[in-house]
Image 1 (cartoon, rainbow, N blue to C red):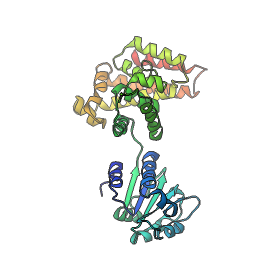
Image 2 (tube, one colour):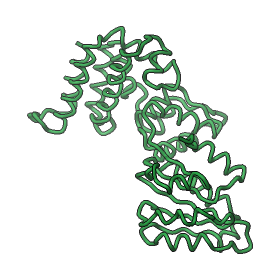
Image 3 (tube, one colour):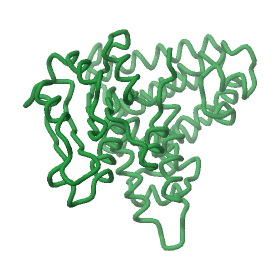
Image 4 (cartoon, rainbow, N blue to C red):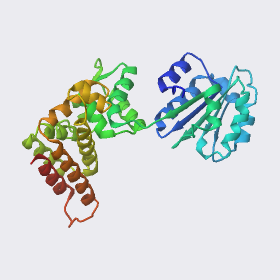
Length: 338
């Protein structure tokens, strides 16, 4: 099976003006599909060339025959023409594209934005796309990959971020990359003059997350069984439910303890071994799990995961005699720590 092309490779080729005749951008993560198609629309043609040589159609309003006809046109007073098909997942008879791919127009850059799904890679169409153009699958990031995304996004803007600040952003925004990019831009704009490093304090001021009372700090308190700190954070969450919804906290705790359970199966109980077992970006990310293993046995972790599941069910009204989210969390934290 051919090695899949990455977003970075596509971005590099586009920047170097190495264009493919067809780009088929598919997958669950909108962010990379949007970035690639927007770059092509913005930079391939000059403003005057765009008037006659850039076409945008929608899968709901067109058919594959019309798209192929548009692609077969010659550009007017320009080296290239650009044809972008948005919502391509709504196009019927997409397999007919294989006829065009036998001899695509090299003066056309045809872009399909096929969101919320992917083509069957066993089909002839995907093989033809890989042969003559770019077939790219944009996958949702895992929680453990977010810090890498944040770091590389900011690096392109010549900005750094402190590890705690990165964790706060990952926990607050989650894996919605378009939203994450928007929040990071907000932070870049509000950086004081001459400062190129994002701190937890800046996030607290501009994004509205408390640097001391958040899910990241709650998780840290639980790792070392700091009962006093954990209870202070729970009390803060109870007093500020709007900014600290229970479902988000439960997701963070479930992810951590589920990973901790997996860490027990690592052949080597060191940073490298645990990082490999959990597919973490770097060994230092395994430190939290190694620290937690000193305080929690495998059996206890299994019980904690069950407690989190029960809390989630009760928060949705099952077997719950009108207990508030704050009380449910307090009860859960007690069960984890004792």
